[in-house]
Length: 445
Ligand code: GLN
Image 1 (cartoon, rainbow, N blue to C red):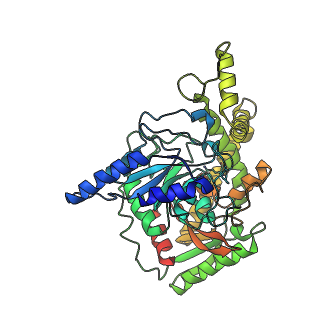
Image 2 (cartoon, helix red, strand yellow):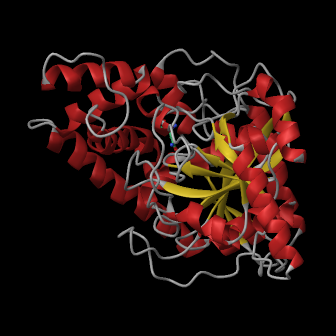
Image 3 (cartoon, rainbow, N blue to C red):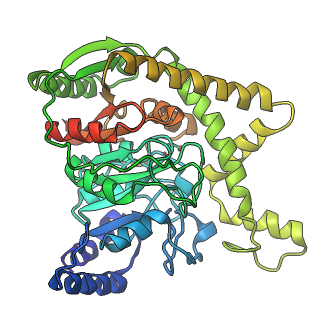
């Protein structure tokens, strides 16, 4: 009830939730109390959490931030939601997000922008902006987000919390509304790496219902948090400290790296030479996959349906024209274009080749160093309404999207304030290095 009261007080200002499921939350909190009284507490018994509205939750509206799904009550729950339920956690509700997870500021939500709790004139980041703002404002001790090109790490950085994007395949995507299936991963957002570790232990693991999920055993992510860092080899990718990086952010990040040196780590410069192609490759691949994934919203089986269609084509056209917002339409257009005959090889195939080179850059770097460190975002949170054209918004993702193209894990940890707005330190590791990233992040905190 404490959290529900806080939500009630803060929400008119922040807008971080799309649905608050107070009744269900109180019922599962009661159930958790009973379990506890009987000595049967599970891993997260009674822990309140907020879920991005991209996770299907049985019997609860799951909108994905879109008018298209404003009337959609999910008939089943995502695997990660089932896992959290099984661990005993209490869902407080569904958090606001950019429409279909497309955005870096949470301004493309059908339900309106979310405000950054640190500064109400700033964006919370996106697309998991509601999940980040809710945790930062103390409306939930932890939340789940998804990250296709930075949507966990960048809002975590903008809101001064910790957010982990796991290795592709580590967490099941079943029941998560798909944006770009080869890039999407769900992950934890919380104040500390320690809290993220507990959430990660609860949600990771193989799922027969997601063919891309891996069978590798899930470690106890909290077990390694206190391992000493003496001898840790840190690489600083030069491409992440170049033009376009706010000098105050660079100072904050370099300050954080110094802290690691005092803990016994060694630091050296490394190069990820194909970094400059990452944004272009991502904005070909992600819209291509999105245009295919979003073709299922046709007004027939679920989601928005236009009034009085004249015929089937009219039903498709008007349902989609009315249901999707501007950014989603832009991505569908880009994706359909790059996949079309005559353009496929020049765009899509080329982008996949670039993707392979980007992945190889990281693997080569991890031959020499254990982790990479750099900024999560080139600037602290920008003002609401400040990014007017789509390309300048896309460039916000410059340090986060290569990670998704490579499939490796990344974590953003709070690294101080610039003009009163939080800045994130991004730490990257090789595939399945989540435990190490959490260990490194925890030592800083
Ligand atoms: N900002 C990026 C995009 O709009 C990333 C979004 C995400 O990770 N879901 O595609």
